[in-house]
Amino acid sequence: MANGKNVCVSLSGGMDSSTLLLRALSEYDTVTALSFNYGQKHSVELQRAQSLVDYLKSKGQNVTYQLIELNGLVNLLDSALVSGGDDVPEGHYEQDNMKATVVPNRNKIFSSITQAVALSVANRTGNNTDIALGIHAGDHAVYPDCRQEFRDADDEAFRQGNWDADKVGFFTPYLSTDKFGILQDGLRLCEELGLDFDEVYKRTNTSYKPYPSGNSDYKSASSVERIEAFIKLGRKDPVQYEDENGEVSWEVAKSAVEKVLAAHN
Image (cartoon, rainbow, N blue to C red; front, top):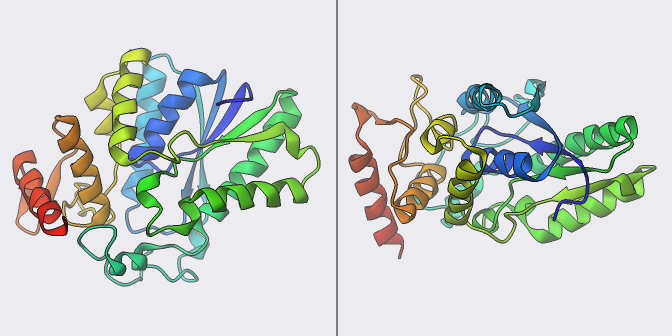
């Protein structure tokens, strides 16, 4: 549960962190959202993050937003997700080749900066401040920095390395939840905050292989997991999908993912 009045949200522009932002708006008085440009191929997510913040502000929500430039790392990081890296693999997340999508120490980099901002906010305002991360159970198999063990060790390192660290807490409400559970919470939060569900989620990007148009692919693991969540929710995903032949309907993307899931199971 939240233990501070302020919160700093690590906002990638994806479905999980965007839902987390809604959760933060529901539970905190003051919300700061931080996005990071680290040279990711799917940089359209940063455009979506800005678009979502603009939409939320138009609906009366108070969000302070900052894009943090880390793109000097692009030539130093070894990952399929950064520009110049190998091709992003396709299929289900639990397949071994999905380890190619790990960005070394990514969540530690993000959480360290978010912690620094949170402690600064706490010192300026005199109010405890939490950092909010959208890590969730669906990522545990492939990404070690999305696990409880990482979160606990990261928290301990922060407390050992900073004065007044007790002013900063963690808010990771989805740590034991999968993407479907996150999407269910998003539906609830949209109703609570008076937001249009489709308007919110069309302003997110989960695809690690988006097309130059900004449309999402439906074959990369991140897209498969997202589409699976929408199938379970019984709703059409409001983002536009595309393949090598051009834009495709929701039914085409949905059918393709159902085949992947059937083969995996």
